[in-house]
Structure formats: C-alpha cells, structure tokens
Image (tube, rainbow, N blue to C red):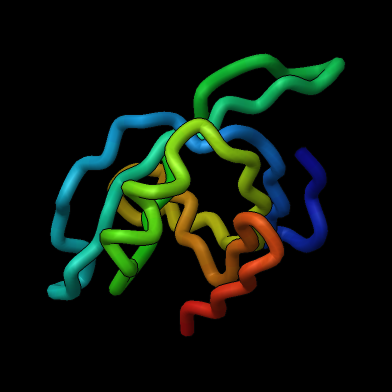
Length: 94
C-alpha cells in the first residue's frame, strides 16, 4: 500500500471471492475485497467499484489486482476505484 496524495491510494493484492451488489451515489456498484500482503499490512480491504463489469469480476476471483483509487470519508471511509488492472487488462472508471 502506498499513499500518493492526501486522498489517493494504490493497492496491489488478490481479489477475494466475495462480491456484494450495492448502490453508491445512485449508481450500480460492487463492494469487493482485496487481500493485501505487505511487510506493514496483511489484511482484507473493502473497495467500491462503480458501474462494474460483473462477468469480469466473477472470472477473476483469487487473481492479482492492482487499483488506483481515492478515499471518501463523508459518513464512513470508502475506497473508490478510479482504475484497475487484472491480467494485463486495464479498466478506467471515471
């Protein structure tokens, strides 16, 4: 885990099999979990992907994923995914 700016974050880990369908700011979204193994952190971190491709996440369970996102902390702390990469496929979310 590496902090880039005040609310920007980069995470690299393994995509866990749990996918939760949610609504975030009146948009279709998923709450996913990433397992991070680092010398400072070994934990499962929840992330939110807005307007996801459902089939892609179902096929890539337990695979390595890298995300760039930002932290929103209005009512609770959420990590919102701006871009992610799974197996040489890069997806941008704006």
